[in-house]
Image 1 (cartoon, rainbow, N blue to C red):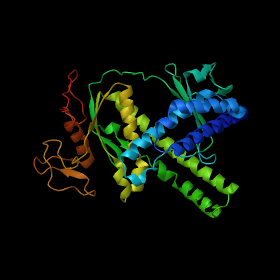
Image 2 (cartoon, rainbow, N blue to C red; image 1 turned 90 degrees about the horizontal axis):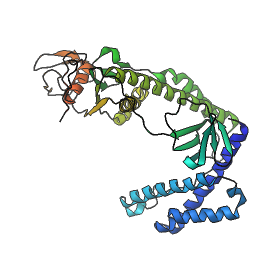
Image 3 (cartoon, rainbow, N blue to C red; image 1 turned 30 degrees about the horizontal axis):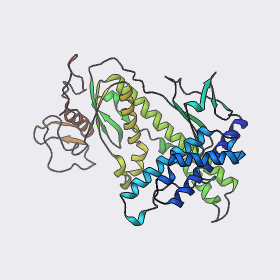
Image 4 (tube, rainbow, N blue to C red; image 1 turned 180 degrees about the vertical axis):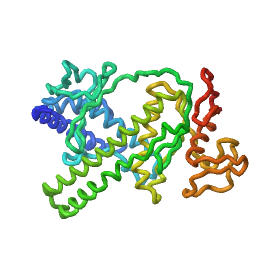
Amino acid sequence: MSSRARAALEAEWDRCRWVWNECVARSRKTQQDSEACGAALLDKMLTKARAVTAWLSDGSSVSQQQVIRDFGKARAKALKDIRERLPQCRRAGMPTHRKKRDALPTLNYTRRGFRLRSSRLHLAGGIVLSVVWSRDLPAAPSSVRVYRDSLGHWYASFVVPVQLEPLAGTGAVIGVDWGVRQTATTTSDAHDLPHPEHGRKARAKLSRYDRMMARRKPDKGQAASKGYREAKKLRAKTYQKVARQRQDTARKWAKRVVADHDTIAVEDFRPKFLSQTSMARKAADAAIGSAKQALLEMGRKHGRDVRLVHPAHTTMDCASCDARTKHALPLSERTYTCTACGAESPRDKNSARVMLVRAGLNPAGAEGIGPPGVLLQEAA
C-alpha cells in the first residue's frame, strides 16, 4: 500500500472515530431514551456537522453513515443486556469513546461506496487501493470492510453470497473424537490429526520477547520506548504466525476429511473447561476449537452431512455393545476394555466409534466404510 493511500485511510478513520464519539456523547446525555439516539436523528446530526465542518465533509458520507448504523446496533444490544441485569449495572456494556491510540482503524462501505476496477479497490472519497488478492471473488460483493490489525497490516474483507461446492459421494462415514495427545482421533487411521505443537516450537522466541519487554517496560505514566514497542511488535508477529499455522493445519485436515467422507460424526466438545486444568497450555496449543470450526465450515461449504454428538460419557461407553462402565476411566488408562462383551481397543478409537453410534450410523467396518449406495439412517 502506498503512503498516500495509507494516509487517506487514516484520515478517513479519524473522521469516522469523531462521528462515533459524538454518538456516544449524545447517548450519554439522553441516558436510556432510545428515540433521542435513533438513526434518523443521528443522521441529521451528521448532515448538520458536515455542512459546517469542512474537515468532516472532505470524507465520505458512506463510511460515516455506516458508523451510525454500527453504533445503533451496539447500543441496542447493550440496552437489551442491561434489561436482563441488575439496576446497579445500568452503564455496563454501553458503547464507549474510541481513543486514537487504542482503537484500530476499521472502515465499512456498502455497495454504493466502492468499486472494483482493474484489480484495484476504489473507495468513496477518492481512495484507490492496490489489492493483493488471496483468492478470486466467487460473486459480486455487497460490502467491504477495510481494517488494520495490531501489526499495522491493512486488509479488505468482502461480503459475497455463499456458494455451495458439492463433492462427489464416497459412501464413507467417519467419527471424530477430540483430545490433547492427538488433536483429533478418527475411526480411520489415515485421517487422524496429530498434535502440531506450533506453540511449543515458538515458545523460545516468545520467552525472549517477553524478557525484552520486561526489561524495557515503562514506568506508570511514562511513554513506551522504541525498544519496548519493537519487542511488543515482534511478540505480536510471532503469535500471529502461530495462529495462522494452526488455522492452516486445521483447514488442510478438514478438507481431507470432508473430501473422503459423506457423513461426519463430530464430538460437540467445548474445550473451555480445559483452561483450568494442568493440560491448559497443551490444550490451547492443540487449538481444538479452530479445528472443529474448520471442519464444520468445510462440511457446510461442500454439502456434507456433519452431525454434532453430545460428549457426555463417550469415554465410558462401549462402541460394540453400548454398555457403560461403572466408573470414569483415568487419563493414564489409554486402553478401553468392555466388562460386558470383552471388546478391547485404544481409548480414543473407541470414543470415535461411539460418535458414529450416537449419530445413528452403524458402519460395517472399523474404518467407517458402509455398504456402497446405502443411505445410513439418521439419528432421532
